[in-house]
Every structure is written in structure tokens, then in C-alpha cells.
Amino acid sequence: MVNQSTVEKNVLDSLLQSHPQYFTSILKNKEALKVQVIYTQINRDANNRPSFKDYAFNVDEANYFYPASTVKMPISLLALQKLNELNTKGLDRKSSMVTDSSYQDEQKVFTDPLAADASPGIEQYIKEIFLLSDNTAFNRLYEFLGQEYINTQLHNKGYKNAEILHRLSVPLTEKQNRHTNAVAFYNTSATIIYEQAAQYNKRIYSKRNTLLGKGYYKGGSLINEPFNFSKKNRFTLPELHKILRSVIFPESVAAKQRFNLTAADYDFLYKSMSTLPRESKAPVYDTADYWDAYVKFLLYGSEKGTLPNHIRIFNKVGDAYGFLTDVAYIVDFKTNTEFMLSATILCNSDGIFNDDDYDYEELGFPFMKNLGQVIYQYEVQRKRTHVPDLSKFKFNYNE
Image 1 (cartoon, one colour):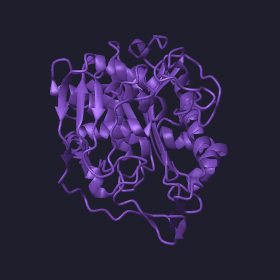
Image 2 (cartoon, rainbow, N blue to C red; image 1 turned 90 degrees about the vertical axis):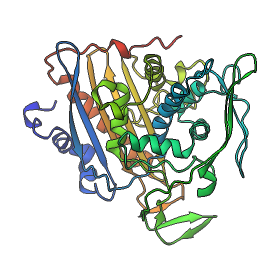
Image 3 (cartoon, one colour; image 1 turned 180 degrees about the horizontal axis):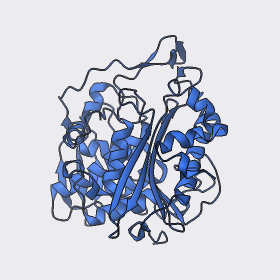
């Protein structure tokens, strides 16, 4: 058990240092591993209003990490926001969305085999994003929003370092990613509710020179020079942490940093973010392939088996190019514990990118699990003046 009197001044540093069996090598190699951690304590007043105290370890907004699938969280929020802004009669997140092919190598999408009725739509795509981090679902929302809207909105909300410049897992050029498909929404009578023309983003974003590692594979050949991330998506950990806070506690951030969401949107997001694959009705997943902690790195790492129902994690993970990231709000209804925790680490000991030889299992997942467990155990014993009322985050996952 941690002696709380020794960690009051710098909780996060002290907790890491007091567990050398987990973190000694991480602390010694924090720069090479590009480790960044943000831990937020949450305290409630007598009226259940939260206040926040942030602790950071090795956080540097200039220290690039590839955000991978964590970018799917702001994209999901913006998709719901855009629906609200369109304010079109009959159009909502359940409406069927058909994606046309408007430019070279774009995909036409008329159905979604994961949906109960095979009908693609904003709600279905967001569920797939948070349940299993589906890349196809992200790409469809990226196309609905358009590259210009995405980046303009994020910058206007104060997330100045954010740059979402490309789809995921499809080999398109910079110009192709600036083009986004025409889309149309239909009602249950197959009548068009709303049509959106194809879009092209002419805006120019920051010139970067982000070179990492010592080599990379291209076309099966090893290129002995650093891998260029300059045209890749970018987010800083503080921005992702703040975006999650803006969703979980919208009243706690400046109005301009919030997304234009309804009360129903928030409830939908909370439930989607915390549902486990075995609890999903549509889509339905094979639990042998997609276990409870499949996208819950903090606290559980790559642990298989059934997770306790009294702990819920509202989060978004990302893993690609050896970067492992998780941005999470964690609650325990049994002990009335809540906290926020975000972390990223580079698991690429050989410095070679695109070789599919990363240290996720040996380094990344154990780090995420141990970090989450250490913070969780500290939080469970941390004294609070007022017991939080967490009822707004409780859901019936059988519905």
C-alpha cells in the first residue's frame, strides 16, 4: 500500500518511482520511449460539482507521437455535432448514410454488414469505433465531415496542434485525402433527407519535419533512413485529454472547447465508450477474438477474460507504428472512485517502422496495465471530502 503522505506534492512522479518493479526501465528511458502520462484527480463538492487537479509525467507538446485511432474520438464528436448543425427535419444519427465515390480510389458504400439491418449510419459507425476501433467506420465519418471542417472546428475550439489529414489503413495520396466523398442520407422509406456534395480542402497546414527512427520498410525493402511522419495525423496528449474531459464533464471546460451535442448525444457516447464487445447487440462480435479488454489498455493491458461490471472505462485507444496510446475516464461504482488517465509510449526497440515488429506485448501492454492499476489502487484509498454521485455513468448494457 502506498503511503499517501509521500506523494502529495507530485503524485504521479512519486507513484511511478515507488513501483520500480514496473517502471524503472521506463523512467530511465523515458525520452527514447516517448512516454507521456497525464493523471487527473477529480474531487466533488457537496453539490457533486467536480474540480480537477492534473499531474503530468514527461509531457511535451513538441514531442510527436502518432495518435493512431485516438483521432476517432474527436471525429465521432464532430459527426454528432454536424448533424445538430444541419438541423434537417428527419435527419439524425440513425438515418441511413450512403457514401458515393467522387474521386480517384474512393469507395462507394451502400451497406454495413455489422449493422442489424445492414444499414450504414452515424450511430452505427460510432458504435463500431468505440467497440473495436473500426477503421472503416472512421473513414466514413471523415468523408461525411470533410478534411476542412474537421481541422477548422478543432482549431476553433482551441486544439491548435490537431491535424487530421488522412483516412486510416488505405494507401491514398495527400491530394486524395483532401478529397472527400459525396454522401446522402435516407429515411426508412428510402427517401433522401439530405445530400452533401463531394468536398475538397484547399487549406494548407503547418509545415513539419517529423523524422523518427533509423529505418522503415517500403514495398518489402528496408530503407535505412528515418521514417517521415510530417504528413501524418497529429494530436498532443494534453489536447486528447482535454477533449475527453469536454465530453465527460462538458461544463468544466470553456464553452468554445465544447462540442455542440445534446443530452441524448452525451448519453449515447457514454454508453458507446464503455460497452464491452460481449455486450454489443449490433454489431455482434465473436468474444473469442474480441475479449472484454480488447480496447481497454489502461488497467488491463492485453488481459483476456471477463472484466468486473462495477468498473467502467470511457476511453479511446490507438496503436500503430509501435505507438500505444489510451485516453480514459475510469470509474468504480463499488468504491465510488473516478479519475482520468492518459498515456502514450513507443514500443519500437529496433527503431524500424513498418516492419510489424513492435514491442506491444513485451513493453506497451504491461506498462498500460501497471500504470492503470497503480493509479487505480491509489485512487481507491485516496480520501475524499464528498462521495461522488456517479449515477449518470451507469447504463443498462442489455438494452
